[in-house]
Length: 404
Image: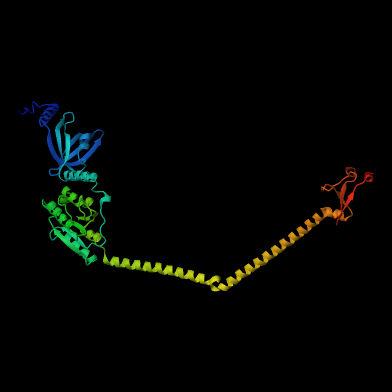
């Protein structure tokens, strides 16, 4: 029932604040939606200012750090959130606040959180790995193009591709690129193009748009279909700042549809210029090699051995003749020295031979057995002896007087 007060019987401030606190406490826990205008962390507590973007009013929210950290994605200033909180009125300060028990992102924040969870799951499976991505063919014979019906993306891709290589061919699959049927139509078109052996590369193109418009190109069904394709897939969704998950799964990411045409189709003018450069480079290399070989041949031909072969033969002959004369002189000198040595040795032998002594008048007395008589006392009377001279010998008989 209402509190009865008057100017004559007012209630103290403390009573009014206590009654307000009691009334606020009876509200229970409620869900509150708003935008985070300010976020402060102090120790294990977080303080948020939750603002109503329409009425321009705000309320203070207090929560534990664990509640703030449990939110996915993490709340930031400017994000829209819903807070499950218990209203509280501080009687001592006369202030109202919300004690948050749970915080959830809503709108774009909740959508981004869902996409982030999908991105982490697919990354863990290896669908974004660089080693599984296929290289684009140098000059595709036929390009599969998935785009919206009569879209600017289709015109950008085809016109830029034809400008770069006029003979390029396309197989176009026009599908819904946003809305409820976009995922199924794009996936079916992708399957048809991937089954066509004439299609060498597939481009999925769409113009820019909001996150909600580009959401089909982050759908798990489409992403797994792209990862399973045998044909290389190029993602050309939106503008440079748009990054749907298809960009991570596709083999090549193009920032715009025009960039996709540039990446898939080579420029015929650039290729002709490159061929001309390579031909000129090859000509210079071959000409340089021929010049070096010609210079080598000229140097070889200018060498004396090839310019006048007989001169080298004569020089070799003179060398052989000189060696022959040198060998003859060396041999003659060796023979002369050997002859001198033989003469000296012969003279020494003659000087030491017994015959030389006998020629000087000496004689050798020998017994019949060849023994030499060295003393007269060793000869018996009547013993036959041989007296040997330098030229001949004489047989004698010893007598008695010989010993005397």
